[in-house]
Amino acid sequence: MNELDTLIAATLRSDAEEASARTDTASEARVLATRLDALDARRARWRWGAVAAVAATAVVVASVAVVVTHRATSPVPPAATPTATPSAWSDSAEILGAPQLDVPGWAAGITPLRAPRRFVRWEQSSCTSECVAGSDQKLMLLAPYTRIDAQGTSQGPLSVADYGQLLDELRTNPAVRMTEWHQESTAGAGVANVAEITTTADVTAAMGCEQRADSAGGCRALVRGTRNVVAVVDAGHAPLVVWLSALASTDAAAQDAEMRAVLASLRLTGLPVSCRGLLGPPEKTGCLEDLRTQVAREAVHQAGSDKATHAAYFAAVDPLVTALQDVQGMPAFSYSVETPVADDLSATTPLVTSWTLGATTEKVYVCFRGSAVVVTTTDCR
Image (cartoon, rainbow, N blue to C red; front, side, top):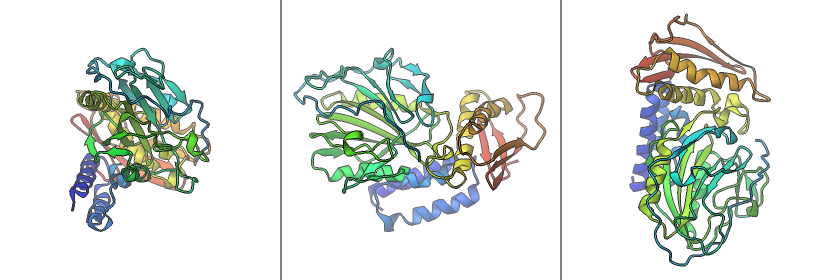
């Protein structure tokens, strides 16, 4: 395998290791082995998005203008190192997956611009010319839905792997310089795959689109003269993008450190996208699988540095179960705990639960291993 395939294989194994304590490991191990064996033959740059099963289409009208497509590229001083005291953002319901994260210090106090469910942007300045490094920083959250193909036709919805392919195609553009993908950890959103992109020309629709039938001019562009750090996580069989942008002359090390800090705080707290009916019938798009993964991650967060208990599990699962009841067009859904629940929520005895979505019913076991919570279809008792 070449260096890229080695990275892909490492990502698959990393996601599998994270999932091994909370999922149906026997069947998923077979899926992992098959995909690893196929790496040499397939040789694609992006494969980690297709392993969503191992780790665990609605029209949206955008109300925010697209990213500006012109900025000065004259030399400017490097940006100062970002502050180490980020400020929490609590309006996560504005975007699919309800991401929770700490914004950089420069964004503290800035009210972000929002488009319904799929885009949020903090910006120091809306300048389009004579921008000054250190005053032109932007942080964006993007839930891309479609892409524009070579014929100008909108295609989607995008899977995580589809979105990776979209970005990898930028490597053929002579105005674009893009690093190989590397991995960063998150607080509760799985593995983030990260790349740095610089460009000497505007690249229309480079970052994807938010609407079903969009035109290239309505999609998210890369702006000439900028350095962009792009991180992609799986929000439930669909991509969520964390995107930092600043002038190309910015302090690259400081911008990279800023992305690591943002990712280190990133959690997904809402329903997985696969449970929203945006990708197709939830019972066929991995909803129950993604729910298991999300509950396990959120329960760990709820436990903090303490031992995980029933309290942490119920704090993680109850809001998701409630949210599922509010999804329009959702197939019949039910959830129950089959084993008696201890009166004391500090208990760590295993739980047996039942999840039913449409015609699919799964028995899900919940076990407690120190600060970790195992949520799996395999009996872990």
